[in-house]
Length: 513
Image (cartoon, rainbow, N blue to C red; front, side):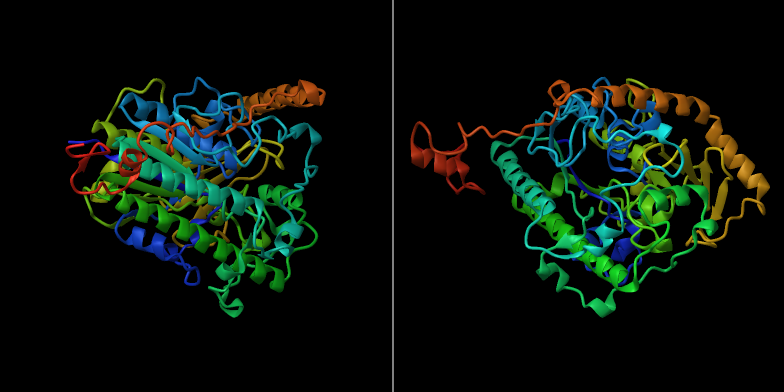
C-alpha cells in the first residue's frame, strides 16, 4: 500500500474568524467551505507566533519560536534545525515547496528538495527589530492607517504577480508528478494573499455588495483602556491617535474578504488538479495560514497581538482514506503539524525525534474527535514594537496573556469570546496555575538576553556597506532540457506528455512501436 501524498496549502494573514465555517456570514469561500464539510476542522487552532517568519519556522520545526532563535522577521532559520520536510524525506517523500516561506539565511530550502519559486520577501537581516530604541519608538512603514485607506481595486499587484506564478507552478508540478509517477510527495504551496496591502481585481470585489460588509464586533477604544501589548502595537501601527473611519473600515474589510475569495479560488484549482491528476484518493490535504489579521476589531489592524482575530488560524485536515467530517474544539497549534504529518507518513504514534519537539500528533483527534482534556496552545511575540517577551497560553476555555513587566491578562473564551473582560483578579487560582505552566518552561529573563544579543549581531551585519551585505535570496530556475521537444521523436514525447495516458500506450510509447 502506497504511503499517502500530502498537499499542504497555506494562506498569509488569513484569520479563522473571517471564514464562513468559523461563523463569518459574509465571506464567500465555497471551495474551503466544501473542504471543511468533509474534513476535520479545528475550531481553536492557533499560530505559535503572530508574525510571518517566526510562525512559519515554528510550524516547520515543530518547536516554539524562541527555542529555535526565531525572534522576528529577520532571524536566521538555522540550517541544522530538523524540519518537517527532512523527516518526510527520510520516509521516501519527494519534498516540494512553492511560494512564500520567508526563510532568512543562506539555507533557502530547509529540507525541501525542490523550490518552484523564489520568495516574495528578503532573506537577509534588513528587517531586524531593535528593543534598544525603547518603548513607543517603533513605527511600521508598511502597516499603518494609509494601508487601510488605500484598500480597493487593482488589476495587477506584486502579490498578484506572485500568487499567479505560485499557482501555475504548483498545477504544472502536480501533473508532472502524475506523468512520472513520483510518489509519495509532500507539496507545500504557500500564497501571499490576503496579506495587506488590501487590493484585488474588481471582479472579486464585485462578488460582494458594499452594504453587506459587516463591521467589527468590538469597536475602537482609547489607548488608556488598552493593555500594554495593545498600546505598543497600536503605536507601532500609527493608530494610537487616529483610527480608521467607518468608510475606511468597510472598504478595507470588503477588499480583504474579496482577497479571501481569491485564495479560495486558488484552493479550488489545486483540489481540482489533484482530482484530474489521479491523486485525490490518496492525498491528505491540510489548509492553514501563518496567522490572522485584526481587521478593525478593537480598532486594531494586522497582527502582532494574541486576540483571536490575530492569533487564531484556520486548520483543516482532510484524509480521504478515513472520510469522517468532524469539528474539534480542543486547543491545538502549528507545532502539532510536524508530528501529525510524520505519523500519517510512518504510521508510528511515537517516532524517534532527532531533538525534542513541542507538538503532539493530531491524528487521533482527526480520527475520533475524542477530546484529551489536556490540550493547549502556546504563542509568543518577541519582535518589533515591544520591549520584552510576550506570550499567550490557551488551555481549555481560558486564555492567559503574559507581557513582560506588565500586568497579566486572563479571559474566559467561552463566556467572553470577544476578550473584553479581564478576569485575572476574579480567578487568581486559574491565573497562578497558567502562569506557572508558562514560566516552568519559558524564561522571559533569559529570552530577553537572547533577543538583545541576536539583535546586536544582526544590526552590526546589517550596518555594513552594501557591498559587504550577504545576499541569500533564492533564485528559482527552470530546466527546459526535458520539458519540450529537443532530441528524438516529437510524437513519442507528445504522447508521453499527454495526461491521462491514451489507451494502448505505456511509458510514453505506443504499443508495438
